Every structure is written in structure tokens, then in C-alpha cells.
Image (cartoon, rainbow, N blue to C red; front, side):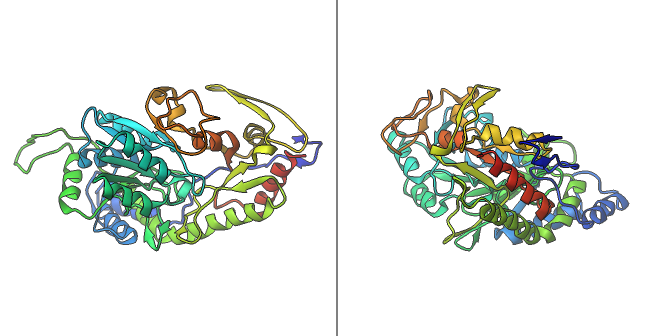
Length: 415
């Protein structure tokens, strides 16, 4: 298959966005669970995985759960979110960051993105407290493995006596001022979903320094069974505990965390070098204070280099222009060569389910906003990044030759 004037040939084997990288130890610990017949939600793999994760994250307790979303849900409960409570939430993120707020009856109030890290804007958060001073909960995510401005957010939270739930699902292994992400919140979570930097095929962890919280999460995650000879239940519970088999996969993965981060960083740096001279930038981070885990490498097209692009709810159109491109063109072109990219997370305030929720921003003079309700005025930074950005193939098993071809394909889209 040839396109772009016959310059390139499609990849024989698909180049993926991000896939699990297995090493062999995973199978050893899965077999250990099988041999010892610990195939349920108790066993040595769970115990050891919790111990190792707590040590790596730098917290006292880690609770193994079925998914990162389950960890977020229990975090919301532990934080005391009640029906009708407004909760300040990262806007540009996956819906799993926000949905557990609604599970508990909370009302997400979306905080716009800042351009330095593509995470929650502390200035917009401060503005949010001016508008809603009664709010006592903040849910902040670290997008694509890049730490948010966590110290600034922490100071604002402390000033207003608010609890922080830190969604580090994408940022396990990333550090901010030498400290691991997932530990800046009062409660943190990480994910071991199949495409994360460490995978268990599924699974997640709740991180805390509070033993009572850890014990409560473990109890809730196993249907809230009381300490009685029979099945006694005095509060609502969930089937959220991590399987000992899944924990075996995670246990085998954990020794390779730093190796995976180094590989992901190399992918990011090759893209950054390869795109020199193009009207684009890579997803940014604070190099003075942060060390991302580089989970996904992303591209942002300069505003003046955007060809005309229109997106509906499920479809997009663009008009090709010489010297310009857009995310739709690049993603469709990559797909035509058997390579997988992805749009930037569509901000939550733009999602039909949350379109009527408050959205707070501070940048600019109010022009360029979407139809969402914007409390506080300003430019919609998240929508701008969504419009001009995309996630590139970031698999750490991608060869340098394959990545160079991806770079050339992207460059050709601007011809």
C-alpha cells in the first residue's frame, strides 16, 4: 500500500500506541499462584505487590484493587464525598478520573488546563474557590505521565482545607521535586491497565499513609464482610479486590519500571529531535521540577500551521492545505500505514454527559470558548489543546527504524 506520492509503504506489522511489555517473570508468579492454588483475591502475590508498590511510591500502604477506576471510587468514598457535593476535577483527562465522583452523587466542577504541563491550572483552581468556597474535594490527574503543578495545587488545597485525590493512573514512576506522583494527594491511585507503563492486564492500587483508610478500602473491596464466623455485612461493599493472578503479573512487571521509563523517554526524545523545523511542539513538562514517565508522546501543532478542521460528536473533516496539517489528517494518515495514534483526551466539559457542568478557566479575555458554561470567563485551554494535539505511537517496543518512518510520515503531512 503506497500513499503520499508512493513515498512510503505500510508497516507489515502494526505499530501500536502503547502495548504491554512482558519479560517472563510475570508467568513465573502467575504459575506460582496456580501451583499454590491461590487463584482468588488472597495470596502471596497480592501481599508482595502491595509491599513493593508502597515502597516504590514512597507511601505507607498500597491496596491492590481490580482496576484503577475501582481505586478511584474507593478514594471518593474515603474522602467523604456525598450526594450533591461539588468537586473540583481535572478537565482534560479520561472519563474514569471523573465518573467515580458521580458514583457517590458528587457534582464535578471542571478546572481548565494550563499550558506548561497540560494539567489542572492552579490559577483556575483558585478562581474556582472564589466562586464555590464551600468545596472540600479536589481530583487532580497527571496527564500522559507528566506531573501536574502539585505543590501549587497542594498549597491551594491546604488554604481552603480541601482534600486532594490524586489520579496517578498514567504517571506511576514519575516524580515531582524528587517525590513520586500518587503521594501528593491525601489519597492517591495508580493503574495497571493493559497499556500502562506497568501492566497486570488489569488492576490498580489505592495509595495512602493512613492505616485506617487502607483497612477500610480492603474491607469495602471484599463486600464489606465483618469479622464474624458467618457472612455479616453492616455497610455497602464491592467486588473490587485484586486477583492474586493479576497481582502475579504486576509482581513480575515491577522490577522493570525504570527500564520502561527509560525506553519511553527515548521514544519522546527521538520524536522531539525528529520534528525539529516543523511547526509543532511535544507535550511539555517542567524540566526543573518534574521527571515524567513519558507514558505517551504527544504532538501539538502551532496554531498558524493548522489546516481547516471540523469535529462533530463522532466524525471529523479537514481540508488539506500546503504547509499545514491537523490531528485528523495525521491520525488518518498514520492509520493508513498501519500505525496507531490517538486524539488528545477530549476535555470533560465538552463531553455530552458533562456539558452542563460548571467549567472554570482564567486565561485570556473570554474569546475562543466552547458552548459550555464557563464560570469565570477566559480562553478554553483544554479545548484548544484537544483541537491541535494528538498522541503519537509510543510503544516502547517500537524500533528506531519504525519510529523514524513515523516521523517521516508526520513530516510529509505538512508538505
